[in-house]
Image (cartoon, rainbow, N blue to C red; front, side, top):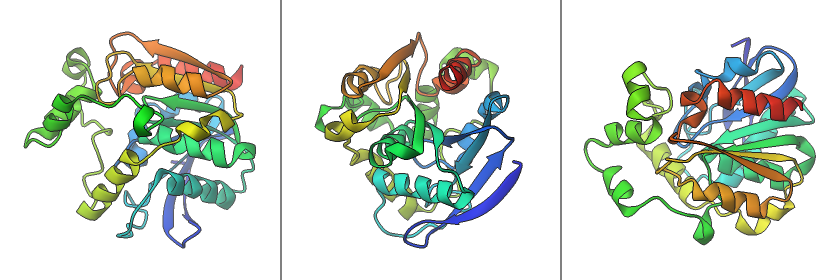
Length: 258
């Protein structure tokens, strides 16, 4: 990282912030129960055009870990607190998985702060979303859940070439209470009614073999967000952004600069 600092959320929670390089600001939001290292494999792809900004969600990394309910709207407020701390009026925002849910609320509640929006492997939440199957849900609570999660993130071919450690499988230092609050925040997300209020041009990306967040959610988001388009990566799973480099990063960079 070029710079590390600490921002304060509206409720006083300390948020560890990391920035790198220079250019138009690009906020990168990771998935549930992950910190900024989720982006380690790809953030450098954007440094020819952007200053990348990450932060550790409350409950992860070097940020505070209050034992109280979290929500994707609260995470979105934390994003704005980070931008305010850095003196940034407007940024591009790229959120994946739960980060995509958080990014929806950033664009909905703070339209003047988001220039362009990228939503990856995410869903609108609530009763309209296409949920993962009961088989996947059961597999994720078995003793070998870590292996299951890795299979949901990456294809066998990718894992055969890249043995890890993979930075997308959760923050191992998270306390149990924070994991519980992250899970609840993601599960309780429902932006369906508010999605038409997004004014930022939006790119929606998804792996078409994603069983963690089924790819059908990409079309649902596109139906609700006015100025949006979808790109699916054939055969890719949840971590398309890593497995489908450089195509995925190129698409995002072209969208943000075009």
